[in-house]
Length: 291
Image (tube, rainbow, N blue to C red; front, side):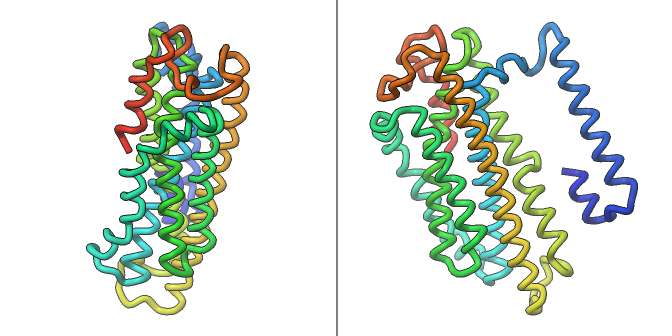
């Protein structure tokens, strides 16, 4: 999160953001090297590289990216651009809350009808579509904002369970606890450590003229804010779409290596490789409960 902020504050001519970026990349590389050589690594990269595991983590990251980025941008739009009070802004987010609460009843029927793999990419595609609707049409009225909130929430509600189930199916039976932690970490990294807010916040800081919290915007500032929101929404859509595309490819590869997953149906919600088919407690806990 540091380098994007420094690029905006100090400019590309300053050496500080570049040094910070290089330091971040070097640190990440050293971490990977250390984890690959450690006897008891903090993160077992071999597990992450398994197709079903990486697929589930990609779907989870895309959903977390979308819901964090969308919530950040919509809140700013309601209060700073449209002048809504905090209470009215909270009411404006109700479509998302209603879908998250009520959507749990639809998960099992959906998976039973279309299968686990198809439910994964359908729900992830809904998340991407919601971001795209907001990025392209959100400035034209609340109806489009509400539609984007509903799409993202609906996708998020299903992805939370399906992504966790995919991760569990791709792991050995004795590593399911690690799998649940990986799912949670993927969501936290995508949403909380800077991907969503760094993209949206950096673009807003770069494109908005002046102090965004100062009331009484000029027409130029309003136009700059709306341009920044559009750019941030489209950028988040592209990032989420990339994660979803990667997840779909990895899921298909993983399904080829897991017996009994070619024809996906109700029986596709099963435990990790080698575990009884009904053992989905760890997977369900990573999605339905947290939403």
